[in-house]
Image (cartoon, rainbow, N blue to C red; front, top):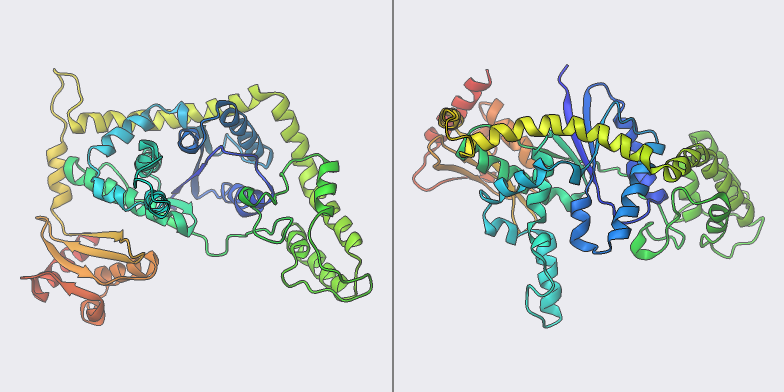
Length: 432
């Protein structure tokens, strides 16, 4: 059975909270145990420097987040768990990608455009306070992904653009130097769990409404007691809808326990009793992990050892790929034979290809390019990348798809449908 490589980055910029645990850590640890998945988890400490210039905060957050993932069950022997800054091949790949990436692509990055929009609204210069690190962030993220030729990158919808940009960079490099990179795909989890915070809004550090994942029991009890509730008295039926307390309980309870709490709400449980049950249920799951976490924080050398195990494993893969990349671009010993880049390039150009991308309007598009680089076909916009991908798949595998998708496809000037059909037949024949 085929193994799929998943890659997840965690930026060390704060202390993990219960929302991080429910929405990311717990499901990711569970997924890492799948025998058909090869998982890469890394601490994106280079990325942290873009927004945080407090050395001790970055250092402490790196320890807390690494310890949290290990305490929650991430097995460094099963997955590759490493610190970004321990892999020097990543910044070198960052430079190689920089040299094949158009500035226009980076100009369209959401984070950069948001910074410019904020400056415009304030009457400042468009690039005021914008560091080169922020501008180049998509290239470093692409290097993180392409360094290990990840197939899937779990992201929220706000990060899909970065995966599309990584695909563009990989395709550009492959076009120039041969097939070295896998084109990654965004793995969007539509049902990612979000947890309500103390005030009922989404639990977030920006709202200052979080419950730290491994706070001491006394602090946990105090924070749970501060969860905002309505004024309904004991004995008065209470609604589970929009109840932060009930949502928190449901995130940690079994289905049977959740149903029992739902009935208790209907029967008018006192808020104090409900909060006590919530505290006990959270602590029941967290307490064993908290003990492990506290031990790791007290002995940071254990965390460092785990990260170095991952770094050695990651570097073994990264150094082999980078050796090939250096040779491909001409950075090789003077007496060495030329790399077979031209042959690889010719092989990659022998077939037509699809290029999928996202435009500034938020829509997803694709192009069909001839083997000689001519544009054959341009799609109209799709609301989601999956829809664009499905259209591409139909064109590749269904003989009648060209006509069926007619309204969503625009042949390039001077190109007739016979040319397009011939290109699609080439792709179908190559796929076997």
